[in-house]
Length: 450
Image: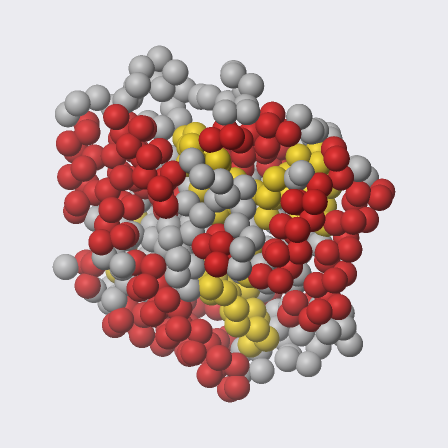
């Protein structure tokens, strides 16, 4: 079966002839602004593996950029969606009440680590929609106009979330942007200034919030702070718990809501169902969680969850949408969460993460181009540098490694402010043999390309 297979390239070149034909048609028919760096045209996928139209088998360590924590083509999810298709595809939630939306909301309310007793959920379609609606909910509840975001952040490509996103390569020519968005410093401790201790670096980042209060917006006009528990596009950088605790204290003092963007970190990726559970254990859980990606095994759906006090404080008409909480996506999401809990994928994420992290750390001693290893659970970043002393980013090497891996059957992607981080986002149903095979290909790539 494909789900138990190992990487295997059978064509003389990549892309193979059938893949090349489809890729050429893609170039003719679709926008060149949506780029694809990989010589792969997918025919089918199972587990952590995909097969292309020429019969080549690839191990996928990207998983739709964190969408496929449960893997490709999980049979029980397919059956759940099929069963729903025989009833109805769609029921707009402000026209009719449908069971899937209610059941999924009830389940999310029961498992999310947000503040408050009773919880309520709003469903949308994508991660950017979840983030944008989380901000709208915070503004409507607090009656305040401004928000704080952080360096290195990625929140989406709508006008609001492009403004919230730090990297403006995603927003060239798109201004003017919405007002009232102010950026503080996120702790990128590997790249803290030379001679600065970690505590001093954290203090600097915390003080950057107070600088916003002084120079940009009074604290009583800030509705929310929005941050990723572990930055994805920014370079797989975990938020230090002591820093999160400090932000939580600032929010509590000034009536500001804390929003966790769990679009990529949610659904067992970091060794917990939600990365914010680590915050909860430290007594600094968020007020609102925005979630998406792996919630429904590849069908489009996202969620915003908060206390009933916050949700019921939203002005009617401010949130809504035609496809939010689509019936097929809800069916997939309910079965996905059930299987994640039944099959202990959070624990499996920790197992995978320990193995990959230990291997990466061993490479760090052998290869001077490896600068840092970091992450939570099975969301791990490997930062490549020109040397370990200067820490100069080595994006050229990352590009070569990505292409080498693809040619040898491993799909892996870069990340980071400097595009010099390799991200590990393999489906959590990956087998031990597949983990080993991927690590072998990646190490060979580093040795061959450095």
